[in-house]
Length: 117
Image (tube, rainbow, N blue to C red):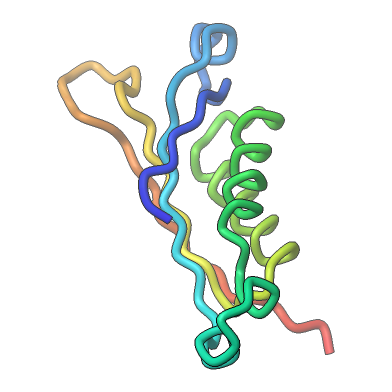
């Protein structure tokens, strides 16, 4: 899922926390696609609408100082709620408040499912 765009209140400065801003999220999920490929049934795969809603909730309902923390929150929710083996999360903050010109700042994390056997 590429370039999902949400509005959230994440950042270190008071302005970021009060006024909020746009955040962009990319999500790569890994799992076997053999069963849904054969059955052609939504129940056998990941419901991308549900994933979008979960990411939206992470961005809109929780506040983080750092986009690193937001990425960790998103990865934990996806791994807990959906049948995936690993996830890559990229969070971009366009127009980040830095003393210079740039398009965005971005973090990328890779997380596997942690087995508690």
